[in-house]
Length: 214
Image (cartoon, rainbow, N blue to C red; front, side, top):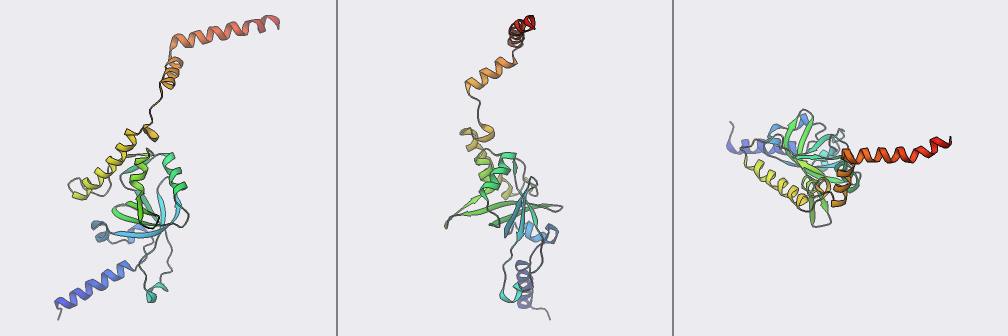
């Protein structure tokens, strides 16, 4: 006979199995984890244009740890962010090899996971890489894959990302850096047809003596 207590024990065992299981690719992660936006931890291996390659490091128990010999990397994308090449370089400079990170599951597309990625800065502080990229003007906000526009978490996260991007815009950082007056003036002159014609005429006059003496 199945009792309420036995159902709780079964659910607890299943949850324990999931939290102690090492995921080696995105398809192994239970849909319930993504639906509940579960936070997982992992070890950084590589940073590419496609995203962060992270080895999942589950909660291990002494008895179970000896069986966790499986190897595979999860491809993590910064949800809601389209980083620039400079943003990729910034990540490579900021993150250390084998650094531990936390990633919150927001969506999954094939073998890619869209996540909020958080790293520790010091003993008591942490930084969300999604926001930090935008705050430094090293990327643009894009729709968060995997979340419906009707969900509360979508608007909560999207507002956070937009606020981070707005800070970069106000401070003219990165891609939002405004050209100085001199830079704009030089560009306007170089694009002016009259000035281009004048340059050609001056160059012809400058080259004429050399042609006559040759």
